[in-house]
Image 1 (tube, one colour):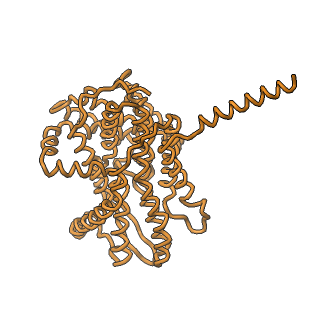
Image 2 (tube, rainbow, N blue to C red):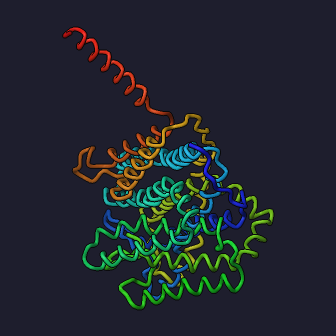
Image 3 (cartoon, rainbow, N blue to C red):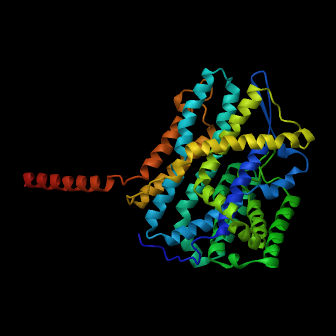
Length: 446
């Protein structure tokens, strides 16, 4: 497959590096401050601090998944433009996304039985296995986004801004159907919404979005947040930009078109602050931090919830700690200690498991495109299965009722990225032998 005809003007952008780092750290921080935990009679009680009245406003800035897809879109277009071969690019990307998840899966195949042997009750195990796996949804969706990137790049060259507008329009139609009592159709927006935001990254790298600054960028932010606010006021969109347990609907699970307008608002703010952010990224300390975190983004994302589980297990189950009422003085006093403990555990996990992402070997074999697409789709399917079912086998279920089938699918997807299957050669040999046998049979009859 020839090199794509994309030649972005930049090959490295400190602004994008900083945006991606800020987004990942914001994801981690939000997930660490959210839990409201208590333990009584072998049962963990869980709540969400962001359900506190008025705290929904915080989620308009802390819900940064739109920025993750925006920065990912820009980075994907840049790296695709630098690649000598689209198939090699696709193979390297799919391989790089699947490999870091394998150590997480391997650990969680062992941890539940180990903890059962230590006397940990079943309900906390089920909660921990669910929490550790549920964020794999992002990797599942991002795999599909990577598979679509070469096609989306071609669409960007041909139709420009019409592509994200069409995707956002499709997302709005999905919402209409979802609100008309067809709830399952809402999951189509896991594709339409995130592809639309991913496409905005293309327009930053190769388009007018990257030229916005100052008042024009603030105008973009005002427009995005204003439309978001109007849709919330008109309903039925909730004000919170994260999923809330027990809420009648969520803007996040599945995503609604509201998140595309939230993305526009957030991107506008960042573009307005770009000179200051570039100056920050040029300083030695932040530059060193970006250089260290950059190759470990996926590991940070995959292991930050297990780090939280370790801290919660020791403090809540082991020491009887209960989260103070969110917003109280005790909560604000305890939160820095909670964050420091979780950060220390995460750093230890990064030292152990970061090597799988940092030191990945280059994929030398050119794997057929069809095989890579199969690997991406299978990997996405397996990861979604794990995200929905968790890493812990439910009580009374057999092995096929737990995570093992999904683990097998993910492992098979990873293996597909390593070398071409001999399907084509075997098919040619089979056809040749069949023709020879047919000719021989004809000759015998004659």
